[in-house]
Image (cartoon, rainbow, N blue to C red; front, top):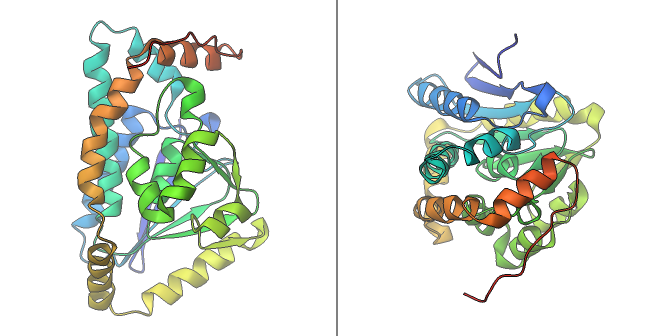
Amino acid sequence: MEPSLLTEIRSGVAHLTLNRTEKRNALTRELIVEIKSELDRIGNDPSVRLIVLEANGLAFCAGMDLGEMQRRAADPDAAKQWLHDSQVYARVLKSIFEATVPTLVVVQGPALAGGMGLVLACDMVIASENAFFALPEPARGITAAMVTPLLVYRVGAGAATLCLLSGQRIPAAGALSMGLCHEVVAPSLLSERRDQWIQSILAGSPAALKITKQHVKHCSMHEVSRLIDESIKVSARARETEDAREGLSAFLEKRKPNWQPHAND
């Protein structure tokens, strides 16, 4: 069985590649923990000057593994499990976002839900024309709470609202126009442009790049890491609702969800 995550460090560049292609690189708890472990290892390697996140297969990442989520819902301590899962995912997002070296993500296909969070946590985004971005959580009865702070940080509240509430796919060209990605290229040119970006970034001074990253975050006036922490409970709470159970079941059973009316809170 092939590993779900491939890691290679060469010439100062750490390449992390999602490799769960049979499940569209959906994130299990085990895979998330593995990503965090590799990020910690990379962070302690002084030779690393750049982190490149990419994926094998047709999809970049389909988000959380909904089959695993549904099984978790059947546990007697489901609420505790939801909270733990949100904490684990938050640690990965913060590790990417707070990395002292530049981070580049190469999106060759769809990036959905939690997969879109991985993209948003990176500094720079190159996407294929085949890529699209979407936050379908409301259609599953849950929320994209963990992704929201990063989304607002990257594209602003107006564009974030469209992504969060519409349920629509944002094609690569649309993502480029709203600032969600920085370049869109033909699939055949994606690897070439990735390598060109890598060389351009490595031409910069390591110290200058580190200081620049810190200064950009300071100038943005957004406490993104704190907001990610605050989103943990929001994400976990949304997964405990009847809507969440119905939404996940409907998705896995390939039917439309039967939403029930709720009294105003």
